[in-house]
Image 1 (cartoon, each protein chain N blue to C red):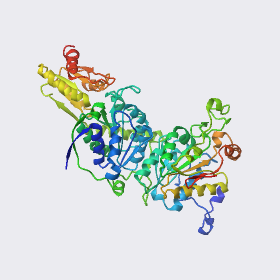
Image 2 (cartoon, rainbow over the protein chains, first blue to last red):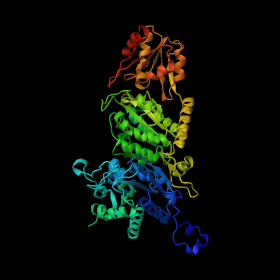
Image 3 (cartoon, rainbow over the protein chains, first blue to last red):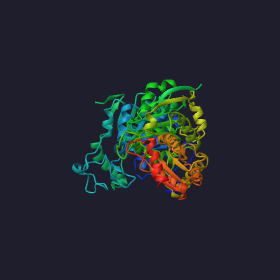
Image 4 (cartoon, each protein chain N blue to C red):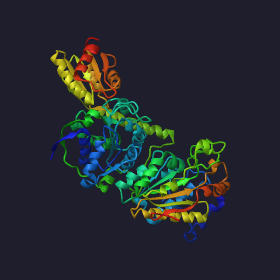
Length: 262
Length: 360
């Protein structure tokens, strides 16, 4: 392996077909190998780079696995208290309407403790992008049950599987925010295959472009894996995601141009 | 040109905020401070100065909006009353940890719990000893008049930006609700985005073309670095203690006894001093204007002169602990207070002085 990467003679401009986007820093990602966060970060960074808005974008990191997101994006960023990212983003965008503002949040952050901030920012129609990574579990704290944990799914706080009679039901925040008049675009994507990555990138690009329209929140959910939290290998985790997460959290556009799809 | 008006304390604060060139207010209604948001909305400051005014979904959201705005270098403010201020504590701790300038007004009502909507001073501990989690302090200003409700808006922002720290104005239901004449400062122009960027190079206003990017966070996973950050905060608090103590004294030159009181209690004590002096009791008053930093040295000096000190506040006895620390056992220190929304009369204060200090 090392041998291949240590051959400077092959590192020539004509051989360069792929490189790190400049909107990502050189810091080593803190995510587990196989986790979807890295890909999602890259897509957001590529969109910022391609739109030429690196100096006009302010991001908000959550509490959760992506709490250190500010170490990886080479843009100005703020780190929010747990669940409050949409409140920060609201103020940033209202005070700097010309800037591009996004939050990057996990499911515990956005769909449990931050439910109120999410719903009200969406309902007010704040002109921001919300990137929502849903892996059905609290990853950073060690795999506890999340608001998005599937029925029957085992976690460290639902060790015998989520019993909905005792522990309640998983929450589909994306469908909820789609019903609010303040959301302009709501979509659910994934990043587990090259095809899915291309679609997700298109959605993220559209979400950022929408900020120029001043028509409300663009909300992009990315259903992702958590191989360490799910106690599966990256490959098995992706299979489990396709077989279990996707039937419950169906991929596709839910609201486009302010209109519910279907 | 200065302008003279008759206003409620809450309204004077709101008007002063607009005139101070503030960029954003984020709040949530609660008695007895709702006039702040009502006045701002009626005044349309977004037309007068371009200021953002937003009614948030909760006190929690409001303080986090303040965090977001402050992290961009803007002058942002929130206001609430006791139960709402409790909800804001997490955000205040983050603002202190991330070293952001922000202004918070607490128009105190009686607690604990939902308590009463009547005036109280029972949030002294919360305001001066922490409130939220972690080792941090707020600069705490205690207005005793409608004039000071207006003046402290500007002073609060000056201090907040000087130290990059949250500043709390600890008012109460009396000062917020009562009407007095107030002299208002002329309108200050809001800073342009370019001015903000130049003044606050640390703020997240969009990464400069030549970098580096700015990060606003209160997280540091390396404990060695977190300790250094905490030491920096402590050094800042020490600097405040050296430079920012504010207080005033009344009739202390020849005093045998001393009253210590802040906010509306200080107003009541001024009258109590007059009544007591008519009875031949030589008593003076020290009014702390900053509750943090506290006028410890001034009280300590007076402790060498007087025979006893009565700390008067509308609580069960909170500030009295700081008076005792300043006096360090040299003379008798007692507390007198009414609470649960009851405001004491000057006569009650004189009687307490006679029974607890002079005769006690």
